[in-house]
Structure formats: C-alpha cells, structure tokens
Amino acid sequence: MTRALYSLCGADEGRFFSPHCWKAVMALAHKGLDFEEIPTTYARIREIGGGVSSTLPVLDDNGRLISDSFAIALYLEEAYPERPSLFNGEGGKALSRMVEGYSQMIIHPAIMRIALLDIHAILDEGDKAYFRQSREVRLGKPLEVFAADSEAEKAAFGAKLGRSVTC
Ligand SMILES: N[C@@H](CCC(=O)N[C@@H](CS)C(=O)NCC(=O)O)C(=O)O
Image (spheres, rainbow, N blue to C red):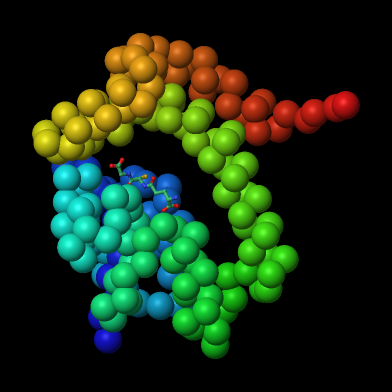
C-alpha cells in the first residue's frame, strides 16, 4: 500500500508552508492514515500524474490521484468510512464548506499581505521568479508594494477575526 501527499515546499524541502496542503495533512492524520509527504516546488506540480493538477495538494492513494484539499477530505471520508469521521454527515460537510469560504475570504487575503515576502524568501530560485511574476500579475503591483502595509495588516488581524457586524 502506498499513499503519498504532494505538498508545497520552499528551498528547504522539510518546510511545508501551504495552508491547503496542511488541511490535507490534518485530514489524513484525523483518519489515522499513513502517508509519505513529498516535497514539491511550484515548478514540479505539473509533473504529477502527467499534469492532473495545477495546484497542490495532490493525494496519490494507491494510484488514485485526487487534487484540491476539500476533494481530498471528501474522498477520504468516502474511501475510509471505518476511520474517524471528518464531517459526521452532510451538516458537517456544509459547515466545513462555510468555514472554507470564510477562511478564503477573510483570513487568506490578510495572511497573503502579511506573509507574501516571507513566502517569496523561502522559495528556491526558480520558484522565486515564478512566484514574483504570477503574483505581480494577479495583484497588479510589485510584491513589495502589496506587502508594504503588512505591519498594519498584522496589527488589525485580531480585530478582523473578532469583528461583530450589526444590522
Ligand atoms: N482550492 C485548492 C487551492 C489550492 C492552491 O491554491 N494551492 C496553491 C498552493 S497554496 C498552489 O498550488 N498554487 C499553484 C500556483 O500558484 O501555481 C485547494 O483547496 O486545494
């Protein structure tokens, strides 16, 4: 039995930093399933399974390839029903989707501004050039300009999480 998780790494192959990959790691751990975590740079993502995915994580479960952290969790839930449940039913799946959406709308943009230059700094040279180019196109500005407010973002982060909205 071989189970492998392709997970994003920097120049230091032991340093996995992608939140999406960590979600898959935690889902596998919750299920109590053994796996090998394979350090993968941005440049190597498309080498997995002949190009099954443009993003990480990708799970290889005995030759079955699944990409996307949520799809991996759904797959594990279905493939290993005898293991501890990740969702405890349909309600848990819906709640998890809501948490995922909240995280991607509120937490990820803030973390991106806070950690952008740190992420760039830990990548290998090839990935550094790719990361800069692709993110600068996406952000519409140089990394350093986007990250200029990172200290202010960090200071506001706690309040952002705790903010209550009234109507
Ligand atoms: N919805 C996907 C998002 C995955 C994702 O965006 N992964 C990033 C790393 S954090 C990636 O692989 N990006 C590839 C790229 O930018 O070329 C999931 O939950 O797995």
